[in-house]
Length: 505
Image (tube, rainbow, N blue to C red; front, side, top):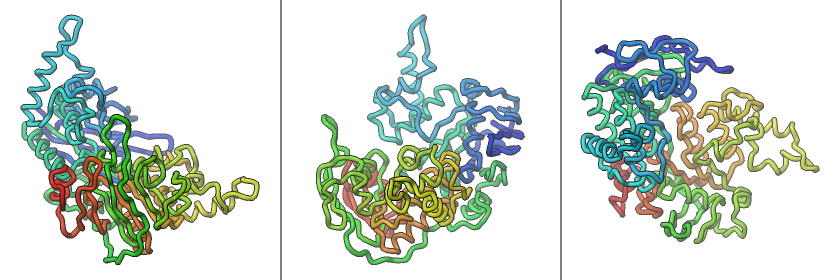
């Protein structure tokens, strides 16, 4: 057996406008967890897609256990013992755990599927791994932490000995993340290997043995985890000093800007998605909503921003809007950073200049007397936003889909803050964003709060919620189950509340 489970030698991938991977060399040893870190657009995802056979490199070689491998598709990768757990789970919700695990690799007996054998193997794996999973439960019935375990089961059912995990804790509570890390340590202790891609440097320090840093498509260094620190890794990733903590001074909140009373969102025959939610957000404060995704946060944001009908009362500055649709809410003074930037934040084929004025595109000074765009006004405003919010490249004519995740997010944040709203609703404002862009976005949100803006922050990142918020509301199964202040609670205690284990703070 070779010392290295997986080696990449000289991997290069050129796209028409970007060199995604530039002569990359790296390796993960048997028995270790290798963390792969870097900014958005650094080339991490492209590299792992090459390893898993989803992208073909222009040059370079891949070695698995010391032998050169030809990987032309996921089937080749799976046959070589490589498994990948994607950030967005690849599961079929109506099917059971067993059905999802064996899908595409069903054992057959004659001309039919040997379901009894398949189920027995899945049960054996569940017991061996110590996963708290019902093999017959439907995916749609499972919380996200258990869904991720199903994804891991899928790879191990296919005999994966090299496991790649892409942002594996993005939707997990601290307790679920800790359980995942315990599994990874057991997994590599059995002689396997794992690669974890994450933006969370505290997780890198906790679970990895070595760290490889990629910047601008090149490896800038590989270090032993015990011999580095989060500030040093951040400096390697970004090429400059990065402030990892949110700096904000205490602030006295002002008048109530948003008041929600007994808010309910329900579908016929189903459990309510929001069930009697009430709270206030004042000028000059950040109120954070903490909770495992799927507990009503999306419905709350959509109701408050006019995107979803509801029962109950929502007051904006003490006013109940007669027509609380998205345009009316926005005209009142609400800005919205949506949780899915591609689906709701940007028109990907539109240039930056058009995306920067979305939502206000029908108003002066962007349109003239006859309803036509005033190009000079649009271009000038767009250029100001691009420069003020450090969007790179600084082109107002580049289509939105050509930007990295961090810069695409800056376009949205810039658009929503530049209009100087009374209330900012920020849903997952730094999801999938690199550490440099996170620092920038956090600073701008705090500046908005200090200028008197009310901010409702919804994030699955507990560190983000605790760092930015003045008050934290915890949601579980469509209800507010507690209110705490960041300095008075630990991440572990907050995680228990998010899991419904404590009803009161």
